[in-house]
Length: 271
Image (cartoon, rainbow, N blue to C red; front, side):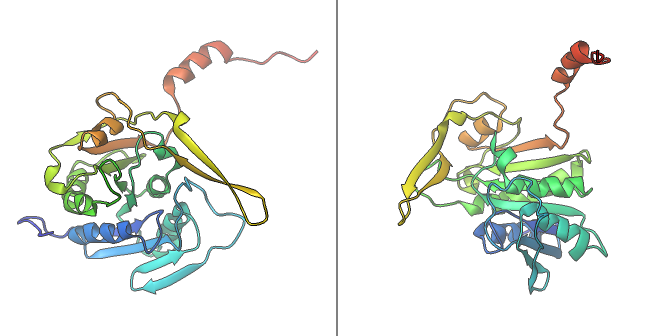
């Protein structure tokens, strides 16, 4: 990507991570995006794929940290482990100014955000007080399995710059999803809310190993629904970039107020 006039490098230290692993093509795309923003870029990513790890934190076994090259490290652990190690150990002498997670191979929209290791890495950065953005590249909506990394690579730098100019609350992370189209086909960016998938589309495949014992593969059927306008699902289905602010505080205020009206107070006394 050719930098436009006025798009000078920013005085930022950026930490990159992901859930697809240190050798994932999406991480290479993220490094290209980060290189457009800053010359001070560090990578701390899982040794192997950790998709679906959510916010798992490794507490029952030691973590192995391997330096691959200058500013690039791999951790035998989860995305949460990686960001924690990156901020609190690798960069402890000078913390990063920004955490970028991704670029995930596949979208992280709707219910995906609760499973996603990509989102979890950004959550950990946010929890540790560093502004954090998760980036995902949708694929599979068109024929074939080709992932259009160029969409994220082209639109990612300017969109991140815009977000950094605007800023956002300290307890919020930003979830960006790029649609399954070439960069020139993206007509707009939409600020969205988290959608809702049909979880009945879960697909469990049973197979047998050579000893006659069953094992299972979990996945979801790729069936397009008809989500409402304003959701991340609708935006991605329609070829728009989706930007969703996600809150670390999961309290649902309407339910909290209703419950408070009915169960607040002293419990029944023992006889």
